[in-house]
Amino acid sequence: VLAEGAEETVGSARGRGVVQVNEVLAKLKAFLKRGGGHANAAGFTLSNDKVGEFIRALKKLARQWSLPPPPALILEARLREDEGLGVLLPDLVKFEPFGPGNPQPLFLISPATLVNMRVHRSGKHYFLRWRRGEREEEGIWFDAADAVSSLRRGQKLALAVRAEGTLQQLHSPYPPRFKVVDVHTSVP
Image (cartoon, rainbow, N blue to C red; front, side, top):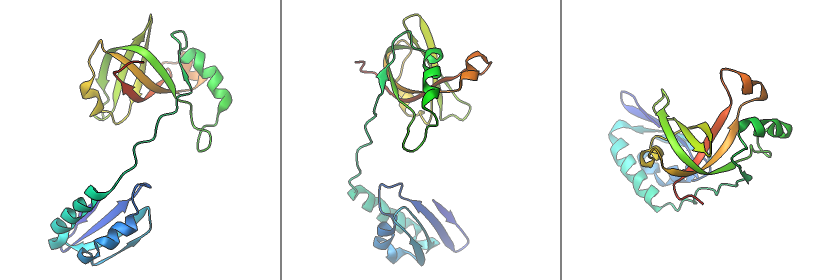
C-alpha cells in the first residue's frame, strides 16, 4: 500500500507468509529513503519521483517469485441429499469451538444444480442458490466477483462448503446457511 504525500510516499507491505518482505525491500533499497521490517511486514519511505521506478522494479522482482500452489482443500465428507443444515448443525456444535488447531469442517455438495446467484450489496460477495434433488439451499461466497462470471443457471456444480450458523437460527428469520469456499463445474 502506498500513500503519496507532498514530497514523499510512505508504503506498507505484508508478506502473508508467501514472500520475505524484508528481503524484497533489501533488493529495492536503492529507491528508498528509509525502511524496515521483518519477514511478514515492513514499512518504507521514498521520494515521489522514485515511485514509478520502484513499482516497475517491484513488478520485475515479482515475476521471478515461485509462489506455492494454493493449499488443497480437505473435505470431511460428501453430504447426502437428506443432509441439510438442520441435520448437520446439531452434530457440528458438539465439536466447537472452531479455530486454530480445530478448523471448521469442510463438506462436499455434489452434484448440485445452480438455481440462482445474486450479488451482495458490497459487489464482491455472491449468494448462490442450488438444488440437490428436491432440496434448495443457499450459501454465500465471499470475494467471488471474478469466479462467478463463468457460472450459469442450470449448470451442474460441485461445492466445497462450511456450515455457518447456530442451532437457535434454525427456526429464526435469519436461518443458518452454507459458506461457499470453492465451486467446480466438473462434477465428480
